[in-house]
Amino acid sequence: MRGDIETYFEDGRWKNRMEGNDQASSTHLTKEEASADGREMAIVHAVDHITRNRDGTISEHDVYPRGRDPHTGGGVTRAHRR
Image (tube, rainbow, N blue to C red; front, side):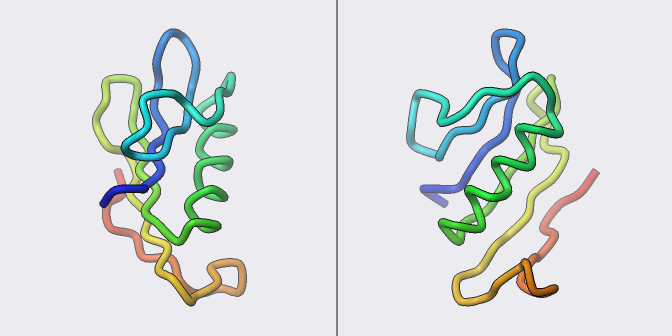
């Protein structure tokens, strides 16, 4: 889906970008930091958050539907988890 948030590794850094953008929205030293930031971005925009391993394979794919607040214990759908 256009607008999903992707966490990925490039040029020695972990980065987040919104699908359709060429440039990263944020850069981080660790996958954990980048993933947490990407998750928050996805929650705000009510889009999917896709986290990739260094080799580009998907390690997590979380769905944050509109109208549900995952901070209150609901709303997260695990589409893919490795």
